[in-house]
Image (cartoon, rainbow, N blue to C red):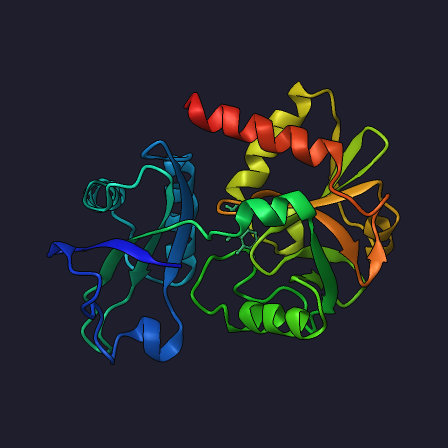
Length: 278
Ligand SMILES: Cc1ncc(COP(=O)(O)O)c(C=O)c1O
């Protein structure tokens, strides 16, 4: 994904082709850094305050200094102005800075949307379940840069001919995707795993819980076995960049009739409508 602009604390907008962090930054050395990813619609980041709220919690859980929300708001608007692209996404990062110095580094990257998203939405994606060997750890629910496991899970899913991974806990409990929350529908009811399982509290998940009610769907949040997903009428994932992404196959078995479901489509439309009116 192409970087369109970059803004850095203490420096403002900088050349994205030049390095912006030192080799001894703890974010790089140890993978200790908090981040957020937010979709930008018509030049406006979607639910930025909610992302900043989650960002502040992640930073606190990683023992980083308190998050400066106003600084991130400024860096975000400066970077977006420099990028000049109204449909894109931003990534916000806070690292502890150089080892031993304790001077945090804040960065905002503006990136182009992946070009294949709408094709994926039209065809639906395939997931493979992947067991997590541990219960959610100290990092459960924290959006930290320690995402090597998530990225390896995507590689492994692709190696097995699918598009993404679906994490399953030690008791066979369905958790979340590598970078998404998981949803499914049986009849009129939508289901998604509970936050107590240590999954990330997706901002898109929160928006869909609100929007589903408007479409007349009850949402049940709980603890479910993987079989519940396999037996669903339709399945989809939610995340800032991919929005509502239909799932047509889990572990090589078709979901429903094997094509994207109607509620995923309706929620995607509602999400866009909500984003363009906010
Ligand atoms: C592990 C994980 N779960 C869920 C999500 C979805 O969160 P959001 O809707 O805020 O993008 C993400 C997004 O990055 C994620 O990394």
